[in-house]
Image 1 (cartoon, helix red, strand yellow):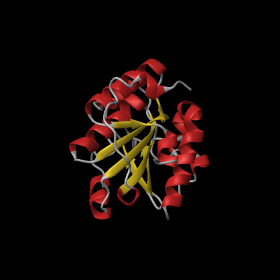
Image 2 (spheres, rainbow, N blue to C red):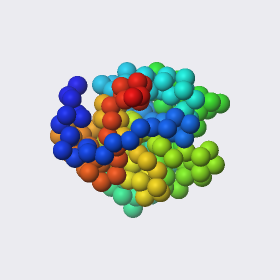
Image 3 (cartoon, helix red, strand yellow):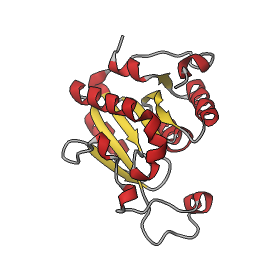
Image 4 (cartoon, rainbow, N blue to C red):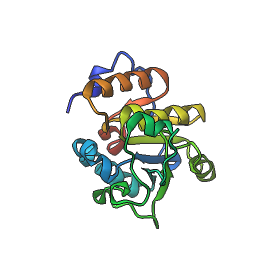
Length: 196
């Protein structure tokens, strides 16, 4: 895997440390349908989940899916074609991540932002979350849109470069540069697991 932080260092000029008691790990769309994109970063995401659970950091999964029938005017469907269907095997979270509805929060969504028409913002306000650690797929779509929404809601966003992935490295790097420039502290997995 490339040294992403080195490649974006001219944009990634702001630094901050995660405050564990005010943090949440948000794992975006690590579902069976997107398993091919998650595969290269899966070990890092598993490490983040383990570390956060051990540290008492809230772990939240998003699950992207659409009910049948899909509105023919739905831009998501027009843009991408076939969509993950709510309740199907491809909609399920990857087993390796051991998502547990008794322990973890699972947010269902049908667009890029994990905040749009969900209870995520209410949950964060209730739990006193101010620091949001983002990982998952796809860097430039759901992860980036959620990061920008979080910033607008005044959360400190920690975007994990080597635990997010896009359809190409070029898109991934472009998105990381843009996020670092505008709204997120771009970090790597080791900075979460081994805080300074």
